[in-house]
Picture: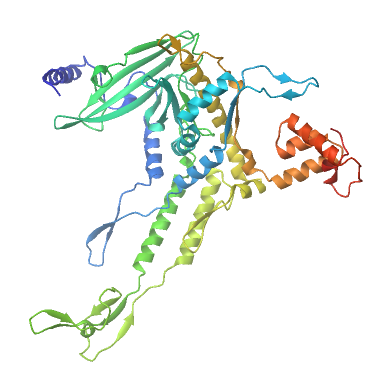
Amino acid sequence: MNLINTIKNLFRKGGAALGVVQSLGQITDHPKISVDPKEYDRIALDKRYFEGKFRKIEFRNTYGDLKKRPYVTLNMMQVICRRLASLLYNEQSKITIETRPEKTDESGNTVDYKVPDEADTFIHEVLEDNDFNKNFERYLESCLALGGIAIRPYVDYSTKKIKLAWVQAPSFYPLRSNTNDVSNAAIATRTVRTEGKQTVYYTLLEFHEWSENQYTITNELYRSETSDTVGIKADLSVLYPDLPPLVNLDTSVFTRPLFVYLKPAGFNNRNITSPLGIGVCDNALNTLKQLNDAYDQFNWEVKMGQRRVAVADSMTEITFGREGQKEPKQVFDPDQNVFLSVQGGGMDDKTVQDLTTPIRSQDYVASLNHFLKTLEMQVGLSSGTFSFDTAGNIQNKTATEVVSENSMTYQTRNSHLTMVERAVQELCVSICELASGTVINGSALYSGPIPTIDQVTVDFDDGVFTDKSASLDYWIKANAAGLVPKRVAIARALDVPDDVAEQYAAEVSQESPEPVAPQDSQSGLFDGDGDS
């Protein structure tokens, strides 16, 4: 750091002390941010459970000495969030944008366009460039654990492409908002760098303020020499020479904020006036602690239950050779630690006493399974989703088992999907608006139509949760009973478009020119009878 910057920092420190230059202890101290700071204490606690980082256990040994050992946990919060995230969104999920009017054939049936929609093509280019399907599933874990996540599209001028920034719960601060939606927020970005021999912490606050006729983005940079404070307001040019302090966006182009905030389904019962979401395990932290404690104690008992055998000290006696070197009598394998030397007895004492204590594995496994059942109930998972077996492994049900039982897990998934679908729809709209409002070298990044929310559809690949055999049997019976035309039954059973189903029905009719009386419920769908 040069001399000029050093002098500037000294003046800023003096100005902050006099109240002339703005300084912040915590981000929630900023006058624009009106969120209860306790909400971020809650998020910090969730983060600790999600990361599985706990202090070491302190205990006193047999001689009264204070010792420490690692705290061994199951980290079930991460297991649950990973499981739910994979059920909500995966690489098989599909996003479709259609801004054109519905197209029909001469018979009035809906048919697909042969050429993809312009907005659909552009959105998929952006999503694929950001590896969205894979990243979204990963960040959903953080969203479910910490109570929310924001996605912020921005322009990378070096590549002239739209990029996606993932803002996790500890870095997202609502401004003026209600409990239903967040339209004004601050996004914090922290940078650590070394200036001379000192470590300096910079925090960029990006304020998105939305009103009916105005959308402004304000950027503020803060500098601190300690990691636990935000620090004193600094010039943006120190880290971001090309970033303006204030940007006014055209509300004729931007119909919504650039960021998308997603939170898990469910009401924030920890703070009923907070716009922030609540993690799926927030109301189960006590159960998580009980699980971790039981597993840690089980692990320690296994370690302490290692076989111990007491033998007379004469059996491990040390003798000296001709050159004065210690030479133990070769009675036991020198690489084992099972045998403990105990004083007493004579030279001929060959007593061997087993000191090993039995491990209470069945008791601990029963306790762990009890706590797992409680946890499943608290987070909305079906009973038996997780179980701890005697081999020390966590067992969980497959997606097919989840649906075949019409389980609580499936219902919980559907509740979360409503929030996820809305977030994806809003993100697609924001990407198109940002690209159309960004002009580089005289041309916009995107000049096609801007989709509305209802023009974005998301297919969450429910096929993995559907019992296809049961679905096929259902539609076969419906067609055989004359309740639905063959074309509809084929379309629903095979999950194909109506025009393809009609083609299949015609081909089946040609292959079966002579009607045969149905022998069972499946004949009506695959022979020449029935409506088409």
